[in-house]
Amino acid sequence: MRKRKQALGASPAWGFLEVRAMMCQDPSMPPARVIFACVHNAGRSQMAAALFNTAADRSRAEAISAGTAPAAHVHPVVVDSMRELGVDLSGAQPQLLTAALAADAALLVTMGCGESCPVIPGVRRDDWPLADPKDQGPEAVRAIREDIRTRVAQLISAEGWNP
Image (cartoon, rainbow, N blue to C red; front, side, top):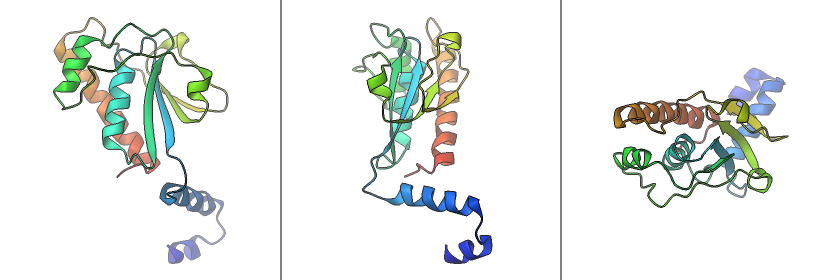
């Protein structure tokens, strides 16, 4: 790392990368919180948070999911689709996205909720335009799940949250 730093000299980019590397490696730092949000918190965001938490280094980052108008339960077809991967969402409960829930978030990923997508001041936001699995058949939900899984893997890699 020292040779790399010398090659970059006093580059501002090096300072950013060095701080980011230290944050990822410092065990005293709390893990970054990622919030996956959609309208009902009954499909896309539940899958994303579960996939994130199975793939990321939980000492570096963890995910939760929430919605702007939570449903009563997670869509059964979503529960079945995730069970195919060995992930149990049968006990997951949709929850409301609140300011308190988002207070310590490092990133908010909204998922195809259009105009009703939340904006939380001071929190970095990304939007993933994804179809809603509600009322979809198993094949369509699997395709949505795989799209989410690919996006989650890319996010984890880009942020350095790999195990």
